[in-house]
Amino acid sequence: MGALRAVGDAHGGATPAQVALAWCMAKGTTPIPGARTLAQCESNLAARSLRLSAAEVASLDAASARVARVLTPDTAPFPKKDAFTGLTLFDS
Picture 1 (cartoon, rainbow, N blue to C red):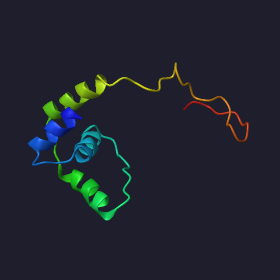
Picture 2 (picture 1 turned 135 degrees about the horizontal axis):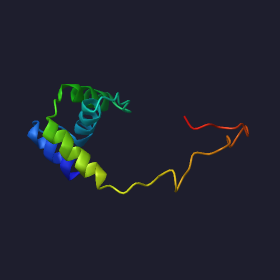
Picture 3 (picture 1 turned 45 degrees about the horizontal axis):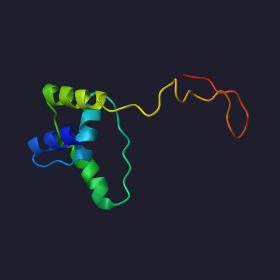
């Protein structure tokens, strides 16, 4: 959270959520954020105007690399069968 806050402070007080969305977009992905209120929706939309520098993206990449992974293919492999139908599932 510290890296998200630091980047947000450098962008006029952008929230960590806005920085996270801008980081995803800077990496070429299309995030699909949730919003329960109009204020959250407006905050999510405001992330579109954030333009992160390459150094900021690298800083966020480095910060995320330090976060321990909760799920990995070794600890929680993709299920082989659907729990409800029993149909075979395939990794894509």
